[in-house]
Length: 179
Image: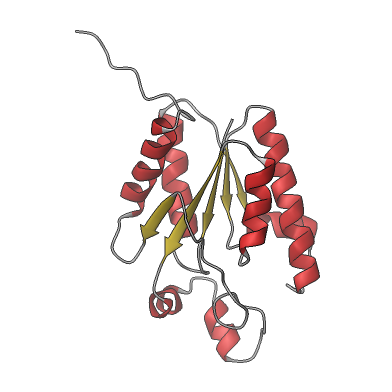
């Protein structure tokens, strides 16, 4: 099976695109598992510090779970910022059928969206670890799919991801009915 890692700054549109991708994969008869970092973190690090050592362990565990799921025939969608390329590269090495999607969004739009209040919290001094603001966010150098979420509809972006999955043979295209 395959894995898709959707990365981008906080509030860039990753979760919305992941949801659209799940719906498209369901229509193809697939049942993907979404590994969403905020949910995953509640089990692994219930009181996160977001320090570098903790992030390394967190993303190592996330990649390992993704590897196990794909090995057992479950498609995986990682919905996670993973601010360092090394975190995503580890998953790419562990999972043979892997693509990386970069959700590119201008910082000012991420700040305006801010559904979780992360940017407001950072501006108020309530955190010192926000990727792309207080700690580096390393964008993919050569993402398999590059989405500009400030000008591309999430469903269209999910369609481009599925098109790539079909093109490289990770997903079979839908069968056409004979008349």
